[in-house]
Image 1 (cartoon, rainbow, N blue to C red):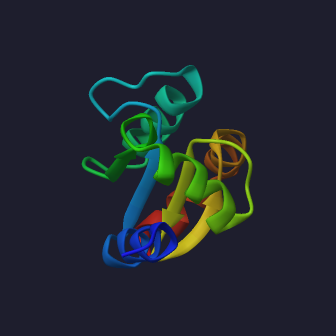
Image 2 (image 1 turned 45 degrees about the vertical axis):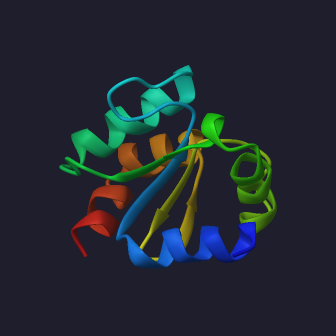
Image 3 (image 1 turned 90 degrees about the horizontal axis):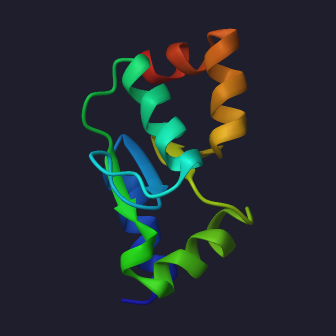
Length: 102
């Protein structure tokens, strides 16, 4: 399976997916840590996380998949939401909580 197909499979088969550096228990960058904290604050206990540091193909492929240059990247119900800055803005406005409840 090629990388884009692999990413599509992950995104479409999990309701909440976070491509990040590290994992939920041990984020390996501040932005990934903030993303996990926001998801937890929204009541998402166990998001599906993908550690991009473990797979260079995924790390580069996810940037092309969403046409988004940075990591972390959040997907909800197969839809690209954004990185940690967008997650922060959406959380502060209440929009992310509504999206994750639906």
